[in-house]
Amino acid sequence: MSLSRLSIDAFRNIDSAQLAPGAGLNLIYGHNGSGKTSILEAIYFLGMGRSFRSHLSQRVIQNDADALTLFALAAGQNGESRIGLRRHRNGDTEVKIDGDKVKRLSQLAEALPIQVITPESFSLLFEGPGARRQFIDWGAFHASKQFHLAWMNTRRILKQRNQLLRDGSSYEHIAFWDRELIRYALEVTDIRNQYVHSLNAVLKGIIGEFLPDADVRVSFTRGWDSKTELSDLLQTQYPRDLAMGHTVSGPHKADLRLRVGNLPAQDALSRGQLKLLVCALRIAQGKLLKQQIDKHSIYLVDDLPSELDAKHRQLLLKELIDTGAQLFVTAIEPAAIVDSLPVPPDRMFHVQAGRVTETK
Ligand SMILES: Nc1ncnc2c1ncn2[C@@H]1O[C@H](COP(=O)(O)OP(=O)(O)OP(=O)(O)O)[C@@H](O)[C@H]1O
Image (tube, rainbow, N blue to C red; front, side, top):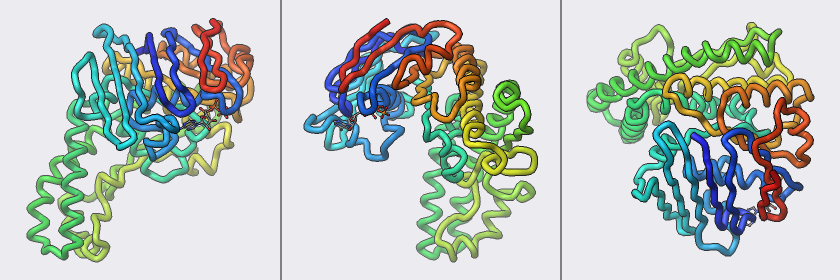
């Protein structure tokens, strides 16, 4: 996928902007607070129906406006599609793909696979298993048509199960739901496990370039003891679950373990190296998506120079360009990126107080 047109209205400090991005690297530059990240955020919002910066989607609507509007022409292997999204201040969201109303945001995510690399990317390593699970599930969602429904059903039944636990229901009553839960949970776990296995194969080469001296190991943990059947676990853990008022172990606790030698990655690597590891993971996901379903991701890269030396900045940009994906990269000074590129950027956009001008 790549965007050939993007229009943004009433999004943060951007009143109205029309961009014609190139299929390769698009450099977005401007002073602090000019609106560079807001452009990346707008693309993400169009693909995910939410922001990567704020949990409060209303905050992205321009102050004093009633609604934000985003539109893009997206080109993929099946031709071009028109994607539009309007979000009102009261929370109502309208999404259209090629003029047809879209009911589920997952349809958007399917149409526009997006990868984000920001200074906050470290959250993948530090913010607990939730962020890492989301990372696995991004790939599982795109790799398997069955994943989304199986995971939605797993979550729905877990919610019901937890309510029954809080109501003090007997095990016999809960066991009825567990049969269905196990079916979906095993499907989810199988897809996740296969995905991490495939990702590892792609990741090895990239890690070899980025962190040649580190013995990085990435593995999947499914959320419960590897030697125990889920059916046995749910039964034996019932008294504990009842006491806690929720299901303690299961696929909702799955995780991605990142280790260097025998240590957790965050104890073994420097901040810059950790950033490279997260970038390697994101690049591997994009490459694997291309291999698995012949679809390119769109990469949103915010403030890349921070914490990377010139050599690693060059290496990272080269790897990103080699993916063949469309890239949107921000910088305060264009030279910080241009000087590290093997070829000039495809397009350059200057942002000043929310106004966007193409300069190349
Ligand atoms: N809802 C909103 N309405 C209007 N302006 C907003 C809204 N939300 C944020 N802003 C303003 O938009 C501006 C753009 O911020 P943004 O983070 O996109 O800038 P940036 O160019 O990426 O800056 P930096 O280089 O410092 O990261 C900020 O000055 C912010 O105060």
